[in-house]
Length: 100
Image (cartoon, rainbow, N blue to C red; front, side, top):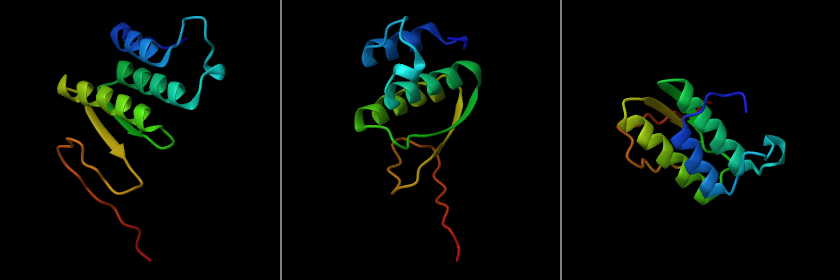
């Protein structure tokens, strides 16, 4: 509601997730809130750090597609993944392991 969202990205998320302009954030499911938050971050900055924890497979795919498009248009993104990395078109991968 208070973010200056990219109208093309917003429309895409609203159609895919079945969101209307009268829906409140608190009433949306987790996937929809996460995708809207990602859209807000992309709309506000040329650089983002994000994760896809808790997303459904479809939500994860939609989010990663948004980020890939953002990077193709000159943005920079760091994806934090806590599971086995499927590089999915990443330009660089830096695995980080906890030392005991």
